[in-house]
Image 1 (spheres, one colour):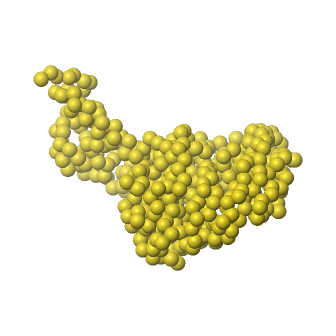
Image 2 (tube, helix red, strand yellow):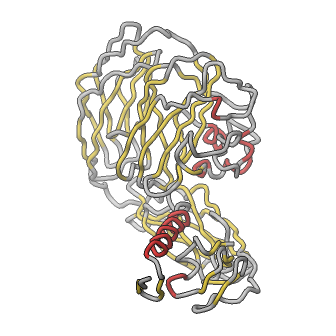
Image 3 (cartoon, one colour):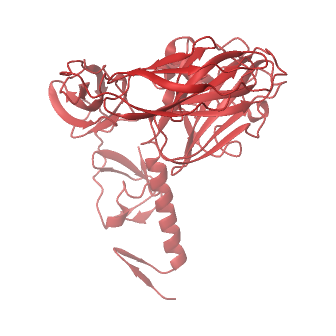
Length: 448
C-alpha cells in the first residue's frame, strides 16, 4: 500500500485523506454559519416582528433579536422540527405557542403581495421561498409540515448579497380566514436558513378580481434635498378601484400611500448619491400593476456644516456564548441625516475599536474570566458627530481548569483543553498536529 505524504502528517490511503478534508470543510462551514446573516420579515410583519413592536405580547427574548430565527435549510425535507417551525430552532419556545387567538394578525388579500425583509446582517443568498397553510389547517394545533402546502407558492432564486432592505412580490393563493405564511431566506454558503412565520387574516374582498391596475405614468421628481427626494406621478386606473401605490428604490419597497395620493417624499437618503425610483399601483384584491417609468435622482451635496449626530445603535446585546476572554457584541444599524460612517466600541470609558458603518457586530477580546464589563457603542458620521451611547453589561465565562491544547499529543474522546481562551472537548480520538488545532478542525473538537 502506497503512502501519501502531506504537510504535517501522512495517511496511508487517499480516501482517508479525502474524508478528513471533507469533514474539516464541513466543520468549518458549520462553525462559521452563525457568524453572518441575520434578518426578519417586517412587511407584512412576521410574528417575531410584531413581538419586537409590542403588538404581540408574552413573546420571551425574541423581542430583542427577531433576526435570529435560524435553522438548517432544505425545508420541508430538512429545517425546523415539527412543532418548532415558528421558533426555527427551539431557542425561542414562546413563538411555538399556537392557537387561533394567540397572535396578532396582519390583514392581506390573495393575489400579488410584497414581502419585505429587514436584514441586520446581509449575506450571500441562494433563494427566498414562501409557503402557506392549507385552507383546512388546525389553528389550535402546533405548526407542523402537515399544516402547510409543502410546495412554495413563491420561490425566487438569488445570486449575491442582497441589500439590507429586500422585497419579493409574490402571488398569494386564495384563502379565507386565519392562515400562516412561512417565509424562508436560504443562505448560499452555509448550511442554514432563516425562518419567519407571518400570521395573516384574509379579508376575502373581491376574491374574483384578478385584473391588475394600469401602471402609474409620468413619474417625476419635483424637488430634492441632500437627504430626501420628492416624487409625483399620474393616477392609474382599475376595473374595480386603485387602493394604493407602492414606491420602490430599485427593488426595495420604501413606502406605500393611499389610492388618492399621487406623491411621496423619500427620506433618510445619503447626500450626493444617485437613486433609482419606480411606482406600482395596487387594488383591494392585492393585484399589483407593472412598474411606472423609472427615474434616477441624485441627492444634493451637504449644505453647510453637518452638526446632526446619528441615532444611537439599537438592540445592543451579547451574541452567542461568551468565552473566558471574549464577548461578541451585536446591534442594529443607526441612521443619520447624511450617513453613518462607523461605530465606536468602548469598554467603560476606554475606546476598544472603531468599525465601519456597515458593520453591526464586534468581538471584544483580551478580557478576564468571570468578570462583568460595561460596553458602550456610539455611531459616528463623516463630520465627527457621535450618537448617544447604547450600553450593555456582559460577563465572561469562568476560567477552565483544563490544560492548554498542545501539538503532538494524543487525545481521547471527551478530553477537555483550552485554546485561545476557549474550552474545547475532543469528539474523536486522535493525535494532535499543527493542522488540527481546535479552532481549525471543529469536526474533531467541540467548542464548549
